[in-house]
Image 1 (cartoon, rainbow, N blue to C red):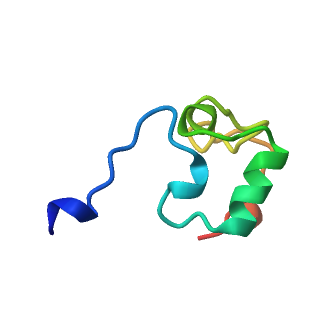
Image 2 (image 1 turned 135 degrees about the horizontal axis):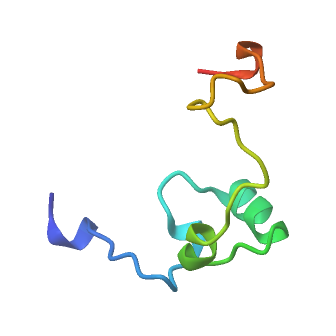
Image 3 (image 1 turned 45 degrees about the vertical axis):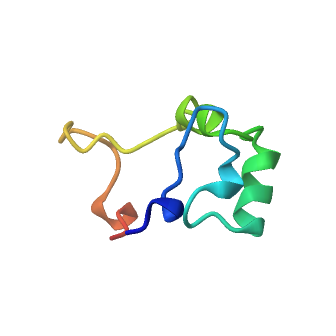
Length: 65
């Protein structure tokens, strides 16, 4: 791959320059207060499924592959 096609990502890189992030996704990130790569890396989910805990109250129906 030619050197001019490589992009260096820094913590200050706007999320709109990430591969796979288009204008609509960038707008959604902005509504969440995520403007830079650093903001994205520091954004933790509000909730998640703990798949290591088998006594979880979540059923397998919620899993999407």
